[in-house]
Length: 397
Image 1 (cartoon, rainbow, N blue to C red):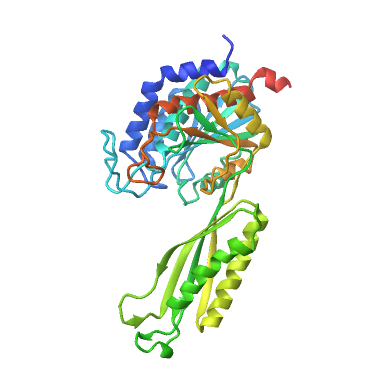
Image 2 (tube, rainbow, N blue to C red):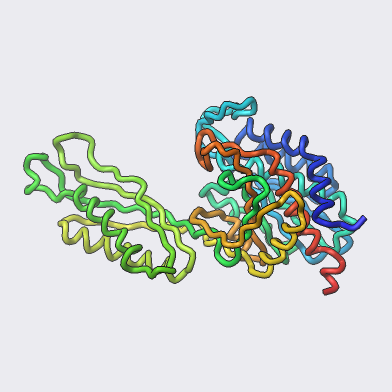
């Protein structure tokens, strides 16, 4: 039997009940970043049962599994994130979270389930793989540096990957749709904090104060001129001030104000410019307002780059899967994902798997949920791409 994407899709559909069971079990027992002990145990047990070389505790709670085919190289790295979010679930389903205040509201439970499915599919055909597959189940994608923690523990060594792929379930696109862009597809994410030190006093005597709240209002407005006046039409960037804290009484001008938010960019040059202009605006606005201000910017994750050749390959294979009816090629979004760290180490792609229920509740919402019948599509797609890269014909080319 020739190993084709249609074959993988058929086998994945036969596993659909098991894939759903994995997802629902993990969904009911969500674990926050770097506490994914139970999830990691499920993953490790399954990979060991498939005969892989398994390592646990990588990057604290991460798991890797090495599947060797008929040769050691090339190596395809497949990354799946495992962590949940600090959200109280409100979804009216029987498999809702059993952990108060913790929920899989971004679909990482589905990523684990699709990863386990891909592991099963590729293990079934290991004799036809002219290379190795390194499965990476990562903790702490949600802003905590899980990818870098695993990299620090050597996940990119022994063996070093030649290709890297990941995927994300998408509650905004219908089942049967996948999005595979090329170039920058996910933004770099930075966190900023601005501390404003003024001189407080009576609200009826503002002339005797140096009002940090008023300075903060001016800073919030001025920061948006970076987007409207310092970037060109094609220079994509975003600045969102998401927190503004100052004062607690109706008649007291506070001593301090605190602003915080996020910066999203794609191009490193634009990112550098935003940093510089933000510091200049905060400094000079504070000076003009008679207060002092400090800016702290922390880089969280780099922008994710889909290798153009790998994107073309992935879209071709997606087109050979009967369940995939629409392939988006112009895909670029402002959210971020530390899959970017793996894509910076080896050419590959982030694959977006449509799974909308049409509910209007999207990622990070207390009622987030997905169409579970889309999960076999994701498992079959990433397995098919891997098999293509490790096929004897591909290697000879």
